[in-house]
Length: 228
Image (cartoon, rainbow, N blue to C red; front, side, top):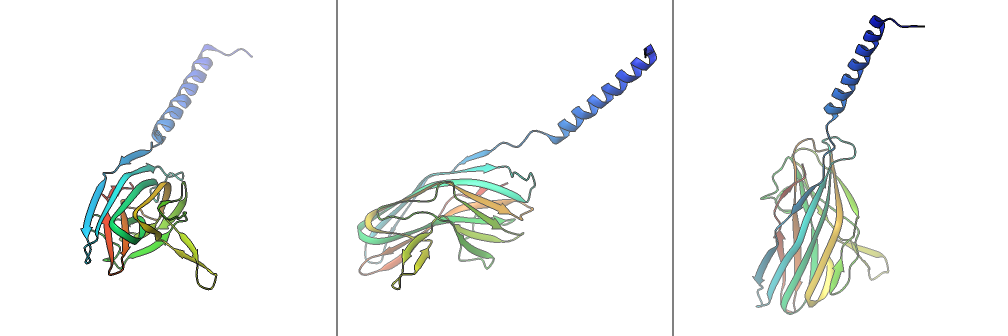
């Protein structure tokens, strides 16, 4: 069948309109959000204990990669976090390091600690522990569900040790018996769900020092960063 010039012009016009509509639809979707890389400052805290023991805590290599949710909704956030802790004492001591993050939904974590808010809950990830040097889980993941005004303290390590009866005993503290303890973790993933507003996180480390004459805890906090 031979088409007239008028019919051909109409077909071309319809095709052009469909192509334009497709282009508009693609533009409306927008490009996929890229990862956001956050380098956080190193920090050194020094304290002298009651018996004169000097303790220095250094946090370094702290960073976070904020990734867009695979679901593409504002209720889901993903972050991969890494850091290193060095604890030095002037005399040999028993040292325990409990490292993690305070995560808040529509809560400023700048002045938030794990002990001054009734809405803070606790969870922990699985890692490996050793004496002298400990490495947290690489690429491990923990999912947190928070609503507006809620916060949670998430710990990156699970130190496993049998108790006096042979049963597994889990702790978020990694123990050392030395003057210089090192703990690091790389690529631990935080998954936050349920938070429709802004979300923040900041690192936290509780350092437990035990000497023959004193037992004290030093807590250090990192700079808050946005999860989106």
